[in-house]
Image (cartoon, rainbow, N blue to C red; front, side):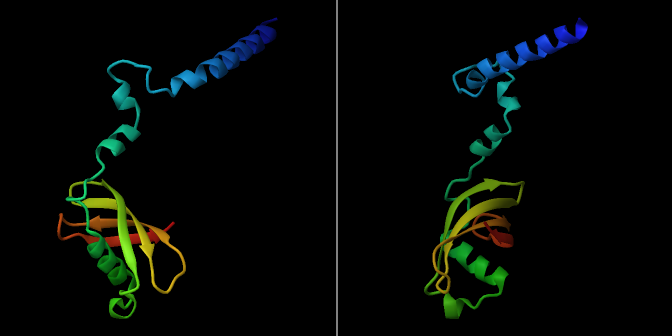
Length: 130
């Protein structure tokens, strides 16, 4: 008899979970003062950097060419790099999403890059295409 009670309890728990799931993700429910700590995405949204603190498009382009060992004098004129968004990784480093249109490649490429330094002197230390 205890086996049936256990299975009935599991079934009721699943039904309550299915019923309550749509309300858990809504923004309008206040879970108390500790609710801001519960979501790890809150810090990322608040730490998005404005345009004055992140690398300029030209700086990002030059650093992408430098890091990749591409000749900017040969391919730089037909290429553009746009900094879409950045987040702070620590005291002197940021991660940025770049949109690169390279003159010798058809279409645009999404690039994730990590920069170190300070505003105005950012140096790209890692990049990867997505």
